[in-house]
Image (tube, rainbow, N blue to C red; front, side, top):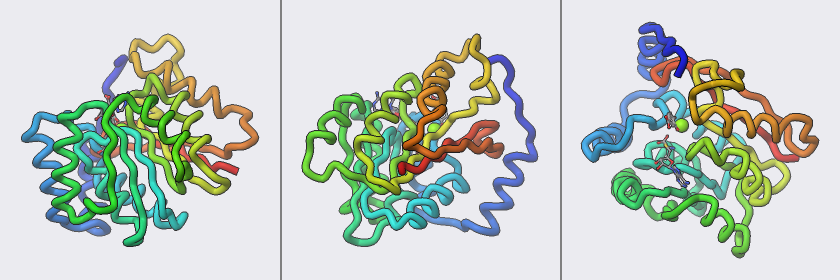
Length: 225
Ligand code: SAH
Ligand code: DHB
Ligand code: MG
């Protein structure tokens, strides 16, 4: 990446926010510890971001949630806790070893009955979901390989209903997203997502830049009409 901008105050403020508004949670802390012990990359959402996802999912009254990119299940646990007891979360993960860590973390957090992990390339699983019986979700969080973000948008639309909220992670990438010549290989896929949403009358979208313990990045939020 061209430059790694960071300011120690970003993490300090995240700690302040977490101390005031989020608090300690044994299952979430254990999930992060297990992920690091298992050698998973530390690219889970931050506590403040996990809580944001949970508030958004609760706010739209989500009963069915789809997540693309499970890793060790940290964001999955945040989202599953937004569900009512009869809710359901389907999360898609390429790597079976990551999925095994996630399964353990999700079960230990007490939301195992609500969560189904589907292993394999997400595009394949999404195509299967499109042909399935209950192919409609209220909230969709996209956080897997950025190269496929435009394809994931297409599937997300097919798996949505009017009012479904879509959230994409990592859409700013330290500002590199606006650089068509970026040497960050994840940038072109992210730019294709913006291109697909530009002038899309069916989807209302914005993106919000964030700084914090996950450095300078952002979320794209969209509502399907
Ligand atoms: N949402 C997680 C972080 C996900 S990191 C959290 O915040 O806790 C991105 C994940 O996407 C990784 O686990 C990676 O293995 C997975 N991934 C990458 N390519 C994928 C693909 N083609 N299909 C499904 N998952 C994929
Ligand atoms: C990366 C992926 C993520 O989902 C994230 O939140 C941060 C970094 C990455 O692949 O580098
Ligand atoms: Mg991410």
